[in-house]
Image (spheres, helix red, strand yellow):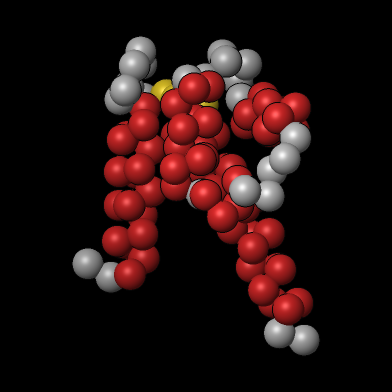
Amino acid sequence: MTDLETSMATLIAVFQKYSEREGDKHKLKKSELKDLLHDELPDLMEHVKDQAALDALMDSLDADGDAECDFQEFMTFVSVVTVCCHEFFEHEDE
């Protein structure tokens, strides 16, 4: 597989690893999403000091209002964070 194909497969596997823990295996409950963020993005999460901000982030991911995060909502989050990281490192080189 190419690097991009491997990355795509990894995103799917990580989502499923946490979504399959309880309830609907195609959606992340708030507790599963919180575990995923802390386990898979520890460097990012160490900068989140405000629990209310984290809760607001989780609420904002829930585009359809079902109190869970489906794969499309998860990918929206990953995309936004990735763009922010890219912009940060792009400006850091200047």
